[in-house]
Image (tube, rainbow, N blue to C red; front, side, top):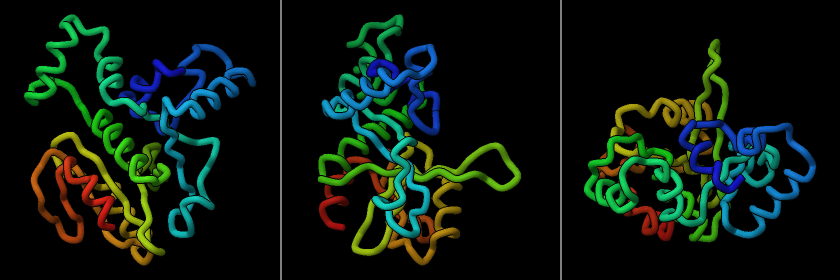
Length: 207
């Protein structure tokens, strides 16, 4: 279950699936083991919120959650442990921004750790697109006073932010501000604030 966390994030699953980890039908013992894993602090649960316009805590779905690792270094090692290159080469390419891979889920894990370290619980929100089998998804939700702040995380490009745009249309009265964090510099697209990921601790401290 622990080892499957990076792969389930990289596959962009909408929530953590025990059967994908164990390869068999879910049992009560599996659920107990998962609970113990969460209680150990080795993983960070991020719960889906069914109605962010009301309350994050009150409308969280305790049966629908993603899992992130509490150690981003270990997450990276587990993610590329089957690479033909050595771990040192992977880290060297990662630090020099030359790793040919979609690293959005890796940066999501970084942000999850930072939010949790600030003393907040982790929440996200997903909802179906009209006349489509696909869904919109907001990576993280936090609150400021009685307002909600949606957060999107990108590894590089910031042009595609349809989900957070649709979220604003749906919950405009409940939103304080919208943020998209990436490797890009500070900027703004309409009401969407663009910030580099390294600024997240300062952002969380000041909201």
